[in-house]
Length: 369
Image (cartoon, rainbow, N blue to C red):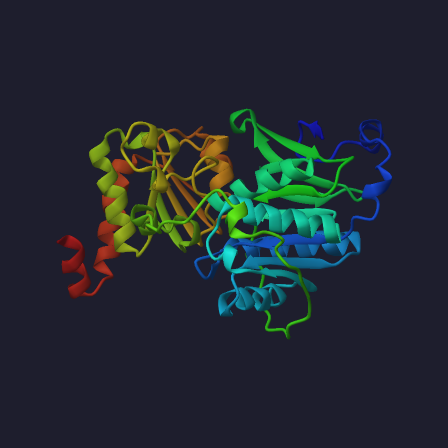
């Protein structure tokens, strides 16, 4: 693997110096694959976002885009296959087996590595979810190839190499990483970093089935039960249309109620910057930024947040960013669409009151209670 500490690909001469002749046994690797994350019968939306990005890469390379579905026999698995085509895939690979009913690292890694060794993709993309991160690391290790994690941008250079860009050094730099001499080139992308492509109803296309060469006795881990994480389920930051967040500029933990009140008055989700989680003022599932949730809302209101690069990475996909800060030189004003130099502690109640005036009496009383 080769690394360049910049957001744009290096000059052709620099790439040529880094790149050796691709080993003969890798020259037959072609096409772009997206792992369709299917857990408990649902396809994770990051899979669709990756299909949109994969479509761009495949078109630049002049190759096919494939969705890879690994799951139990049944309707949910085949629904994932149909959705892969609806979001732009040219073909789908599928492994159905009862051993794949719940995620376990060993059978899923076996399924994916067998598929790669049999059909040889040049690029393999997975979501940087809890499941995807676990699986991607195991697959890359088993295949002895490179993996770039938590990417914010994907592209292919003039030589057809995947240029995977991610923040580094605590988010202070952007690093473009190339896996020049190994295949497949692997990357994970966090949910909501890439835009959601348009879904177009299409007939199911070419499907390539493959068998899982594994039995239960080969698997060390066993599923004893499933306990959903109720706390995380309450926070839907990644897919909220409107988000209000607070930072250290609020001054005290009790002032976070101002953020929550505004969010409730406009039907929004609420969150915070990393320092507030570190202080214990909010749970980690409410953190927005590079090490928290990446969001792409229609409206993002940031109150008392300075706008360090770690936070910027998590919010710059928003359609409209409104920043409230007493410091006119705060970094957040460099990328906010609307900047308000004001004390958020005074402005948030005024905004909440203005929105409450527009509510029906019933909803106003409900909010006040």
